[in-house]
Image (cartoon, rainbow, N blue to C red; front, top):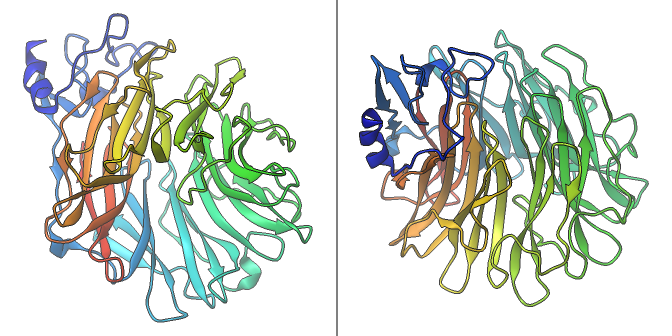
Length: 495
């Protein structure tokens, strides 16, 4: 263990507990770390380091300078993803002139960053852009295009593994049905499958969660068959659908919706790639009755899946006593769900006001949940961690504090877990007169020290994080500058 000491001191990590020792990939049936971390004697370097000549070297961030912004001013809602080759793609909305908001896609190529605008062939406002990259080097972008800036349709642009893009050319190329649609989200599985969800109007009175998927690059998209082919029950409006998929083909879709009087958390599940998605009834909600789900437009509720089929949905909800707490519903490997028993059955402390709850499983089966919580002194970013046996290492009522002590506020935490054991949480926090983007990387062994990624001098807001490709390359992207003139900036953590 001596060779680990410098890394552990730098990042503040502990070691795995008994029974969780990592095994290098000399035995593919039992390995828990990839070849980049494998030591000659069969052990593993800690997460976020690489083995070089039998010694563990810490992986370092490449920090951007303020002059390295990409795209034009007025950038909003930036997302990133990393394909199976380790190349990043980005998408954001960019306010240009009134009535001409566009979607900008940036992709890493051998010649550097290449920018394109797949929405320019269509009239009106482009917004709500999201992106996902596949294992084969393919990618899918989706967004809402609107003539008026309010109602609109959902469109897709696709990149083949050879780098060729196919863009929509007219309104006839929309993928949504019905009169209007919004809030697209994407997820990609290791098999090459990509799932696409959104809200669409149907039957003249409801929004519902629509879903489509394709099995691999070049395959035809399947679903929805009609405007009323939705996963959600016929009850008012569905909101903020989110989707995830694992290597077995299990998938979860979550959203919030009125069950008649209050907004409640719902989910649909698919067990295996060849099965169909469940369609909950109006009474089949996850959240405890008695108070509504928090109306959080960023992410609420949020699903996560482990490779063995375990799953969770996490959300924020009013407690009925003045607070907004984090709640968790869990599915075991046999498919049995455990829901909150009542409003008092919170994951976080019940007295705070929580937002932006997210969850992820790492490759060892540890569950991580992050959120921003304000108990009166300003929002703070917290993390709860659960071991594969169900034991809470950092319980939600006594979570690990990730953000800077004394920061005026810490908001919008983003969470990603890689396939080689690493986890990153990134957020925006106000220290002094500006917001900055900070991150902490960790693993099942623990979390390291805070690292500031954004350059000083301007606000840094709305971070997004992705991990992918060989040996878990990581990217954190954000908006640098004042909200009306901000541009895109990103930091990278190479293998």
